[in-house]
Image 1: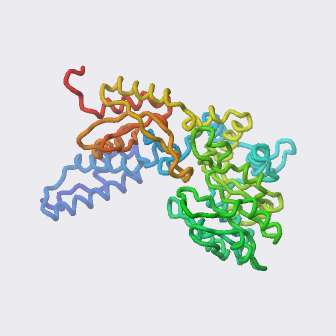
Image 2: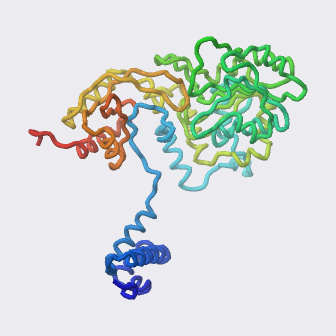
Image 3: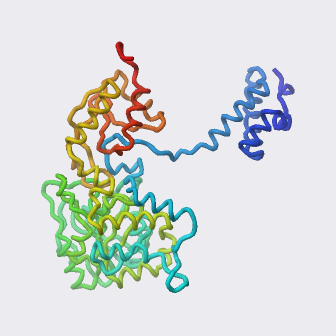
Length: 454
């Protein structure tokens, strides 16, 4: 057990296995892995362990290299029943958006090039026309997410000035995104009006002064205030703002372009309704109920949108070609009035219980275990808090549900389920139909065979 018995770096590199490993992973990276494993070996010998062989060290080198080059961002199957699962990437993209990304990513594109003029163009034009037609807004601007949209609006319109917000709307959503923090970062001064549960129009009116730059209405997103509550309607805020030349920024968040009440859910405020109420500026997400890629979308009066477009921060927050390609493809389905059938989020929301029951029964029949029971799915993604949809799920009895769900997460592909009343539950609502065979395969591999099964 001597450090002198350890092979040198060069001898390991020049061995047959070392040369093969370096050829596969690159000499520089292999060298780093060898050095790391030799250091581990030295510490192990000093602790009293035996000297590892050269092949043993190189075996660990290969394992280290494979770990270094593995990616942690991988596809999973969402069987949780949460449609807009933020941790799992929110909205899955429609087929046309996937095709658009592939086509645009394969080569060059007209991202900032005008084919007709043969000169430089603007990336804003690709989505703006579609958004104008869908919503009826005068102008539109796309940035990289809705937090960025709100930050840009506050910075461009209210820096070193005051913004009025109801205390009932000082929200925090996933990832620690807080309205007061964003306000502070923008350089705007937050002026809280009203109380936690009741804010009146007069509270806003009494707070307006010559330093007031904006009135912000923030959608409650992922919570509800119930009971003795009051908030002024958007129409009243808009009229008040017009009287004092103070624009209203309506932060809708979820980006609903369709009425969720059509599908048995509560009503989520739509972009079109905000525009009809007269809101001069509206911000919302592209990857929530809109069903597209991560994006922040701003629509409204042209003069205000142009002020945002010309602000230096807009360049730092602009979307790339892949985002715009996917967003435009998604928006086209709304124009063609086919969003419910073409966009996965809306297919999941609108699917009937009979179809879900049929799929769940097929899973149990193919796997040979589990039962189909009634349950509830949720929309998620900061949309429609406490609203659920009736569903049929596959429920599996197991002595160790946490261990079993962990085992499912280690499968290929990873299968993400939920635990309900000590049973592992898989909801077909959020599983794409083309993933059914993979669900069945993973469950067959993961569940112990019962006696009598072949």
